[in-house]
Length: 376
Image 1 (cartoon, one colour):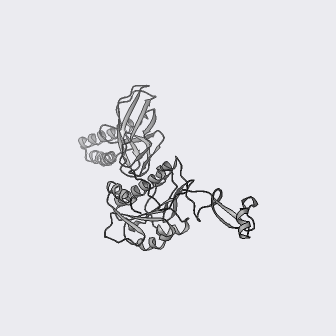
Image 2 (tube, rainbow, N blue to C red):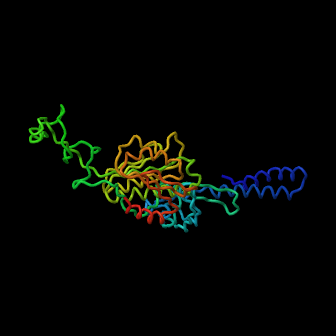
């Protein structure tokens, strides 16, 4: 297709030729003919389509925000020889310039280039856009090659120890009245109710009390770390502050997941991730946090807590003081509550039973978190 310069040349050449012919001056007419010939030649120059096979590799396909990632293009020329080609590989909204060397017929060249990883998210890479233009830049034709691939730019994390919940642990796992009923661990004796299994009756206690007593069995469960991330736009006027907040939430969740403890992540829209404690949990949590964005919603993140099961540690990642009152209202439902305020604009005092930390960067979070872990 013609560039703006090509369209301008054609638009000027036509009236220039007409004026020269009408006035009887051959020079303007010859200049106009030259302009039209140049435009036609430029269009013909860009008409041939290079027959290329493009294969792309991304290494690694998952990377923390700010860490290096590269794309590798393997370009094979299946047609006639092609001179150096100007190309752009799309990486999200940012085009990455790629210079493909001269390719002989049947030849293959590999080109390596850096991918942008400054912003977290799912970054589509490709297709390769090949630009062919004439020397005068009167015409240009863009063609696409290769299938796009996905690069996951995940939150940055720092190593944090598991935050103690403040609850004593059973030898086979913590048990409490909140533990789910099961068949694994003895928790207490209680009176028989219709529907209880007869094999759970404790006959000695029944004989001593004169009332049928049964063993209450529960499934021992590890305390859950619940991470609440405030994601409403009015809480994060600066996008960089929200990125740091996601990094903070990811670091807390990764610390618990690395110890094989269950982790639950919430925003105002509801659950974002819910793991039970296993070797693959860390990958799941980081992948889910890769796509979280600020968005309007009728509820704050803390409001979503009223629908989740109580117990374990609660960590709220927010920016200001607006949520402290709501957090105090749900304090009794959790064994330990920590509020991490990311780059707050004003000081605040913690409600009773709530531990408050102000976070300016990830390095500061590491030291503050370790001191917090030693305080019960």
